[in-house]
Length: 444
Image 1 (cartoon, helix red, strand yellow):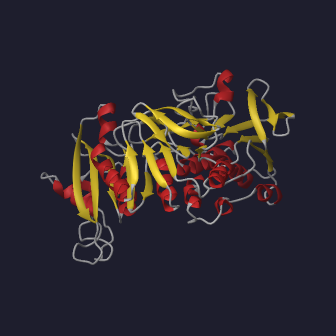
Image 2 (tube, one colour; image 1 turned 90 degrees about the horizontal axis):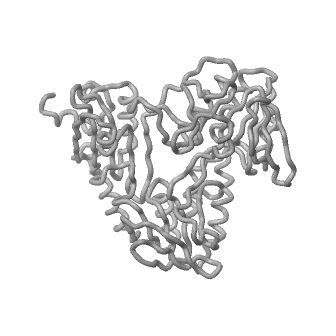
């Protein structure tokens, strides 16, 4: 059995290792268009200000380890351009310019996603960066010279906010442009106001309801043209979203979601026999929405990759789905969400209720107690949990994980009161903040 995997990062190599463990003597070939395998993309922003000393520390296993220790034919510089589903042949071009052709019995697409450029005009100018790969980050670091004073970040999502913090820590002026009315779109607007306040405290200039139209400059970017005026800048970081790397599959007849993500079933199988997909190029079943979704995160990529490898090995290993849990750090704030927010609930037509609470993350009388802000969404008729958003300087990660577990288990708001959660004054109040939300409802 010949296994071929396109993509050498989280999903792809998680699958490769499961095949290695479960199919003795399997012939495994992995194709990576870049030259680095298995690295932590989520750690890239923290190399900027030195919290992580080097991009090398982000690499979990190098190419030589996969080749020498596990016997995987791990290739680099291989750009796949076409998949012939009838002949089961992959073709493309190597970095050297040479053409290649590889046959397969079972194929995994784990090609990830690439940053989206909001405009076309001026993107060829020097000084415009995206941050998705180690080479891209190293290009940015080389460009962050002492004479760079003003950095403009386009996009207020995960990467945009994390980069705003670390670029600010390097002593640069930071401006963040957001097309919508608030940053951190994983939050509803009222909770996002705490993020706006944190940006202001740290001298990050926020330009909301502003769209970028072009970049201008003489060889190097000097101006960002927006619908609200012209902005001077020394460097631009674009973090306005990503799109699945699936264009090379368009003529296969494979089923895709509207955004280009590959539609997969619970066993990570595509609509074409013997072809699987996992990670940021594939859809994810959302347990709360009860439908396919696209929430590209490293955790999901690793899980889907692992299960794809097991299924390709002949095991029965369904992917049970996600609840959409994510978390990020922005200066002294932790921002976290799981399930759906109120905006999602309205769009999906849920008959819902929303509960808000401000609570201390530990016993209020204990030194260091800090306030967090919580919003919980439930289904009105039976109080089934639908989602939570939490913002605060401490204790957020603990609560979002508890709530995510409750979501996965399809618990109700009253059920939270029965949870046996750890309590001691340095760690919690006698009623956890999530349980305090449940107690808010007068019917409980």
